[in-house]
Image 1: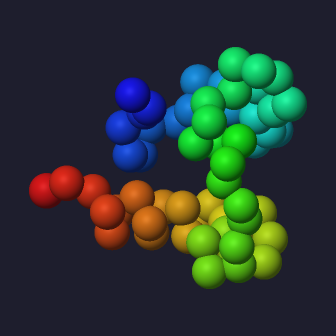
Image 2: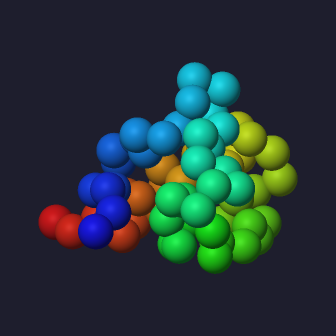
Length: 61
């Protein structure tokens, strides 16, 4: 069912890497995601900022 917006993924390491990357138990939504500049920006700092913006923009009031 996924995680709520704004909640850190349980499988995200302190280095901000997916602990399930390349493993069969990685959720399909993660495996099928294709990074795009309008979603992820141009670097890690941009991605973190944009993800926060997307979570706020799509949150249920």
